[in-house]
Image 1 (tube, rainbow, N blue to C red):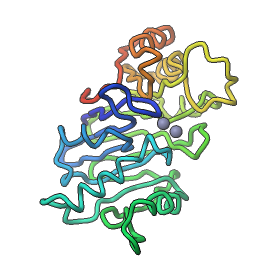
Image 2 (image 1 turned 135 degrees about the horizontal axis):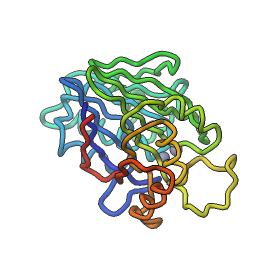
Image 3 (image 1 turned 60 degrees about the vertical axis):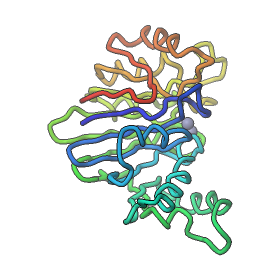
Image 4 (image 1 turned 90 degrees about the vertical axis):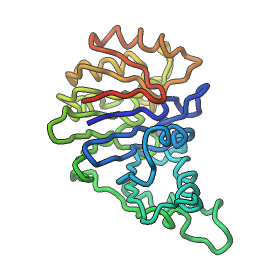
Amino acid sequence: MKLTVLGGSAAGPNTGAGCAGFLVTEGDTAIVIDMGPGTLLELRKHLDFRLLNAIVISHCHLDHILDLAAFRYLAMYNPDPLTRRLPLFVPPGSVDRFSNWTSAFGDEDDETFLEDVFEMAEYDPATSLDIGSIAIAFSRTFHPVPAWAMRVAGPGSNDLGYSADTGPVALDCLTRFFSGVSLLISESTEPADTQDTADKRGHLTPQEAGTLAADAGASTLILTHRWQELGLELGADEAGATFSGQIMIARPGLSVFL
Ligand SMILES: [Zn+2]
Ligand SMILES: [Zn+2]
């Protein structure tokens, strides 16, 4: 299994880096997890978009979904268009939210903006989502909208964990969920000296990301969802206070084999 980072920024793009987006390939299977602003640009460097098997969305915040709208235009109006509808797996209960969101973009009388190119389905977090040779398990995070962390598995490969967006409340649930993953991609949005109490936070500090990776037994931590203004390298240093394994910073094009 191979991971390629497509973005790495927090709620808005950093200089030259889009938001949440990860390409995961395993054999002939290729999926993208989250498709935030600026990530489609990076995806085209690594994969023919027509070869994607599915897109899976962690939650409905704009920094995780905006390029779905761009993908729709790419897939429909490209001279070599997508000739089938691409499976798009969204969180439970969110299909209506997507319809409302995209109603601003369509032509008059167009009520199927995303459905024109996507086969939309809500995943069931209680069961594994199997896409080709990739299997994804889900765990609810602590965030202002329902958000789902993912554990990605492929045959003969170590597991990959993705925190999605989450605050530190009930982090032990995520620790159990990620137990034994080799690589953890964790959000690290908050400054180390945040004064907000845990129950007011929908995001982690780098130290908390490090704790999550250490307690889960991961060997590698990729810090993502990070504002450049807070210091990307500084975030790695802060995570190093709680995690002794390898720490990398999510940047467009970073690839890791599992
Ligand atoms: Zn986010
Ligand atoms: Zn979010």
